[in-house]
Structure formats: structure tokens, C-alpha cells
Image (cartoon, rainbow, N blue to C red):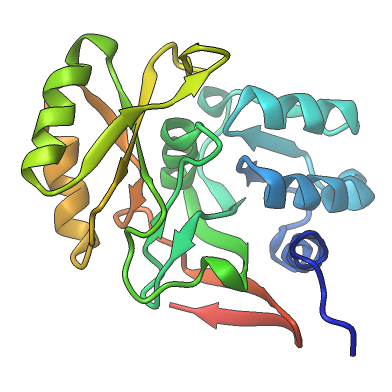
Length: 226
């Protein structure tokens, strides 16, 4: 059997996630390359759902281009399911997210949803979070102080750049990417960093963790329930 590319694995899990979409409901939709595969798959059953709540302007544009109505989070109540990718996921369903710069809105939609289904290829499954640079959305005036706070933890923080200037999120803020961390206690870590003045959101998803992970592997989709 020919081994699948990372892109093919993403397509596989994107399609597998359709079974978690509840007909007649509004679905929460994340952001990123794996989610783009899910959005493409979602378009094939768009007439069975009311629409979507999206975690980014990029996902909103893709959903609308495929004829899927997008609702503001404030217009709807609880969502049945939120489907999103991860930069890392561990054996407990805790994740690092934010590689696509949408972590704050992703966490908001995840908190609004009864179930978080993570879709990822097997390269994202880790023993301990932290090998992937941890994204942290910050208010710009706090940047240097927050970089020093991460340094005191043993982390190295840098401002995410785009076209020679700090990247600006959909919320008008900046992002730090922090390397050198080993996050063995994600719940405590998330709570701690979220308390630092100037942090909008830290990209550890422990309080809004995945209940299910659809992992794309060479032998097909592996379903992990937490």
C-alpha cells in the first residue's frame, strides 16, 4: 500500500469528521489547512445543516464561497460540535493551537460547543506538549514584559512577523511564538499564563480540550476518545 502524503491524510480526516456533524444544526468550524479539507467536505452536505460559526475571517471566506451560511457567535446558542485541527495533541486530548493565528476565536467557539473534535495527521500526536512553538496572542504594549516572563520559565519568545512587520491577528493584536517549553501540566500552565496582564489567549487548549481526535494514519483514520 502506497504511503499517503500529509495532504492526503488531512483530506481523509476532514471527510471523516462529517460523521460528527449534526443534521439541522449549526457547526463550529476552526481554522487551518486541515480544517480547509473539512470545509470542502462540509460543502457536500451543506443542505443538511443550518450553517456554521467560524473562528477566523479566512475560514468564513472559504465557507461563504462554498455557499455555507456563517453566523456570528453572538447570534446562536450552544453548538453541538466544534471541529478544528491542532499543532500538537497529547494522550489526554490537550492541545497546542494557534499556528494559523486564530487561537482566541478558536477558544471562544470551542467554549461554545458541547463537543470538540480534533482532526489531525499522526505527526501532531505527542507525548508532551511544547515541541511546537507555543502561540500566545498579546496586547502589543505588553510584548517585552511577556517575553521576559517566558524567559524566566526557560522559554524563548519571538514576535510573529509577516511582510517585515508584526503579524496582526483578526482581533488587532500581536502573537508571540515561544520555544523551549515542556508543558507537562497543561491545565495549570494555561491557567497561569492566562493570568499574566497583556495575554489575550495562550495557545494551550486544556480547559477546552478535545473529546475526540480523528488521527490520519497510514492505515486509515484512528479514532481516539478522551
